[in-house]
Amino acid sequence: MYSQGLIGADSSTTESEEFLKTFQARVDREEKIEPNDPMPEGYRRTLVRQIGQHAHSEIVGMLPEGNWITRAPSLRRKIALLAKVQDEGGHGLYLYSAAETLGVSREQMTEELLSGKAKYSSIFNYPTPTWADIGAIGWLVDGAAIMNQIPLCRCSYGPYARAMIRVCKEESFHQRQGYEIMMTLAKGSDEQKEMAQDALNRWWWPSLMMFGPSDTESTNSDQSMMWKIKRFSNDELRQKFITATVPQAEYLGLSVPDPDLEWNEETKLYDHGEIDWAEFKAVVKGDGQMNRDRLRARNKAWDDGAWVREAALAHAEKRANRQPLAQEAAE
Ligand code: FAQ
Image (tube, rainbow, N blue to C red; front, side, top):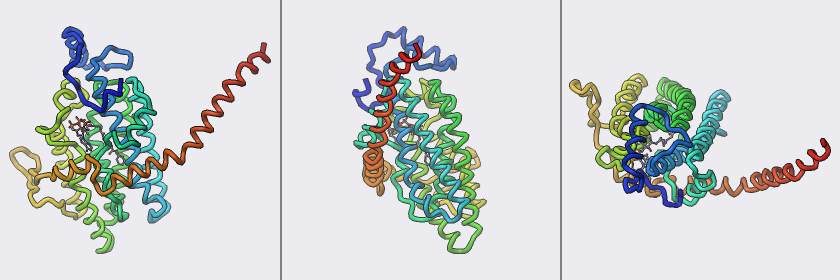
């Protein structure tokens, strides 16, 4: 099934017109689609693709911040960061489980991540050289993730929508954790303020790229919006994020690194400069600063964990073999 590739909605299905119409009517009535419900193959594959990529993003997303757990500047910061990174691992697990309800196995998804075949969010291919990066990730990356994921709580597919409710609650703690780090740095010494500005300079544009290509380039949006998997387009969410975040930067006394950023009184939104889509494409293709490093780290974790998987399997086998004896004794 899944071996057909990581492809998006495919309109060349063999399902009857009537079946597709009935399904669309359910979606339009805002009924949740559940795992055993009939669904078009394109809908199923779109969800496997999106939820799988989302799960991989959470798992790879543990790496840039994990880099700072042993170097957090205080015990309080270390505890909060540990909890955040642990949450991200948990989000990955809920999401893999949600994808499994669509008939794809966790092993298949993991194999696709480790081989470099599966996509994950471009944002996690940037380095975290300073402590301020941890502030910027919480503030901007989690902030962008929340903007994108709140509408997913209303996604037409029940298991994904329900997973998103808990994920969004946790992301909101992550965002505050990051903003608080930025506030501390921005109110600190000149050197700390400079660190905060430098992190904002490096994370601003990649955070805007998280929302995906512009609407004219987004291949999956129209179909995903029709199926109510997505509720807003990539550009709409990006614009909402900019509008919410610019005043937060002003409050910190930091400047957003976009000379073309300007409040538009008519639209009540910020006009912004051109995003470097060539950079986005290169990162998604695997040529970002940290792509190779991230995949190496995930592959090492998989290899290093082999003994745990083997031991768990051996234990399960032993228990299974013991059960008939225990039953016999009880009889
Ligand atoms: N990076 O047609 P569209 C987080 C791909 S979680 C890489 O617009 P779609 C938590 C896209 O897959 C962050 N690839 O696609 C956290 C598609 O490729 P395909 C992840 C990207 O699906 C915080 C192609 O481009 N969040 O941050 C990206 O309709 C801190 C065409 O694009 C989610 O996954 C990208 N940025 O819209 C963790 C949320 N953007 O498969 C740790 C769920 C697009 O056709 C620390 N996903 N592509 O070959 C979504 O909402 C959607 O999938 C979008 C993309 C909006 C990401």
